[in-house]
Length: 332
View (tube, rainbow, N blue to C red):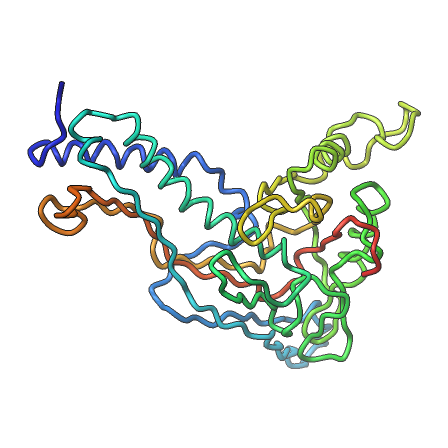
């Protein structure tokens, strides 16, 4: 039976790297689809945007071109942070060739880093009706938008006007035609730029938790040939194929990732193609192996320690691309 020794250490590490990568890739990156992803080598970065005019202006013969003055949106400062996890491979695992245990340890290590990133991204929506939440490490996380209000709010402000807008559906309906049309109406009637001018934001995606009733209702809405709310089969379903559907497994969870039944009816209508959610990655998720006789090689136990880490920052600078209903019928 082959033993894992310092002589075949490189092959051993290469195999475990493959298992770590398979674990990382096995976790679906669903929440990342709702964010603009970029690489960054800076610890602190500022995020904002400029609102430009809505329409070109008439130019009569001999007139100068109209010069617009773009309005600076609110600013958010992003500070990156690092997450990490370690696994130890014991002497007994190596001596007695317990490869199944080692493979499982590395697969889990890869999964847990990917899952933490998905959890942090998803919790921008889970706790998005508040300006802060306390994460699983006990850290208070400020998730307010540039106007210092919660991501989902009934009275968002803009810099260049006293007009406000809302991106939370009134009376928090469960998912259905009435609720969906109320969310669509917010997109068509409420969205304004920093000068208070009406802007056009076209939603393209419905987001839900993995609550079977809500998830299946969305699938019926998007895939039925006839209207899913009427028995008359001759009535066309106007929603067929209109939206994508993303299911976020961690949407209805607590800060530690445990099930939270009070959030299972949450649903969102978003414009994923025009997201103002930003994910900046300073350190891509990676695995670091020990050196025999050096770092990660424990003299007292003969354990070999492997670790995985990632560094990133998350901000939602402007909330006009996402609307939520918490689905419990409460006044909002």
